Length: 252
Length: 121
Image (cartoon, rainbow over all chains, first blue to last red; front, side, top):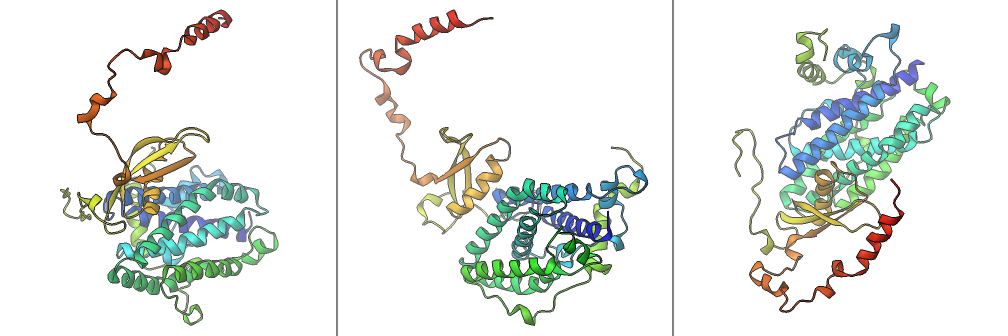
């Protein structure tokens, strides 16, 4: 598998894995029970997407359980995850906005992957498009509800949006080998995705009655795709790996 | 109900929600799911939500996850009209009207006899 394709799969998997974990941190702490269950269930979907992607990466020297290794033992510096994914949950307002911005990018990414020349990706896209559609429905419903709720709920959603946008734009950072996969018809590329994403979220944010700042004036938070991970990633992975770190060779 | 976990701080549902206007607070919605197209929607439980759109999301996660279905309905619990159990006597009939009950049709015997005759073991 060439570098571009490996990087593309890894970064897409890493984003799902880390966002999925962050969202799962709300399990048991959600604002009310029904939402607690819904958010936890969607977090589980995300971990499932990451798992499917990690499995696509061929194991060097026939290494056993390579997908698990990628998730739980790979060095932090080898992660390709966007800073957006690793940000801690400061409040439900932030988590909902991240969910909205991230899941629209995910939905559009997999929609584009439906016609990927790399068959395992087009197959996966077909398989999970329903789940992602539901995730965007959930995000939109909350966005509309809270943007049109009280003065406080609207102000908090707007503040969370302003705070999160530079990180969300960091999702579309290029990576080593991107041009190869564009040329090979695997994926149209991050710039193409970003254009579709901006169009989609602009319409929804306007419809919800929030204000979208001028995206040209925002500097995206880059680095995650190129070896400069978020400062929040290492502590997060350390926590996720607490059990396996006790005995890396344990069987389960 | 207040959680025993001091870290858990949930919104308290308002029990008299049926007196509130839509969107004012959480209200119960009844959930109906449909196993396959053409089937009746069957009542499976309820969820609490701020509005119908949100109730659908929660219904999908809570009742669509464990068993396959193709469609769901939600309806505000407050919009359901019903008799009271005190009036259950209205369902009793004074004289035998078994002939009106669907399972009383004589044809059932014929169908069973036909089935028996045509079933090979």
